[in-house]
Length: 143
Image (cartoon, rainbow, N blue to C red; front, side, top):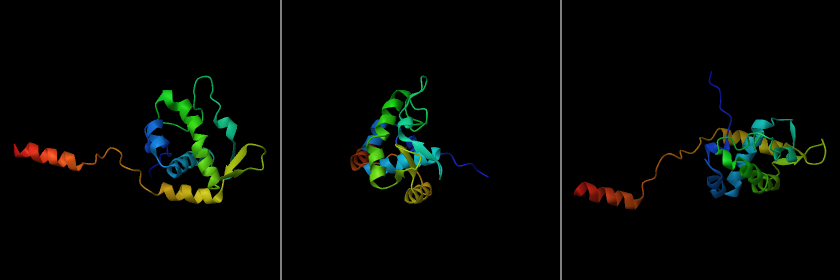
C-alpha cells in the first residue's frame, strides 16, 4: 500500500513568483487543496490564525511548504489575499457557526478538491522545444 503525499502548492509552482503567474482560478484551487489538507471535512478554522507567524517560523500551517524560506511570509499573506477572495467568490469556503472569522470548506469545494486530486501534476521539468531551437539544432547538425 502506498501512502499519498499531501498536496503542496510547490508541486505546481516552486516560488511565489511562479505562483503569481498562474491564472487566479488555478491559484484558488491550489490554495483550497492546501486548506483541505489541514482542515478535513467538518473542521473549521480561524482565518486570522493562518496569518499568524510564530517566532521561529513564518508559515506555521505549512501553506507554502516547499517554497524558499525567505518567501514563506509573503506567500502566506498573498494566499490570504487574492486566492482567498477567489475561493470565497466561488463559495468554496463559508462562514462557520463557530463565530466571526471562522470558516469551513463547503461541500462544493470538496468536489473540486477530490476532482483535482485525481489529475496528474504538470511536468514542469519537461522542456518544450521551440521552433528556433529546432532550426538551430538542424543547422548545427548540418555543419
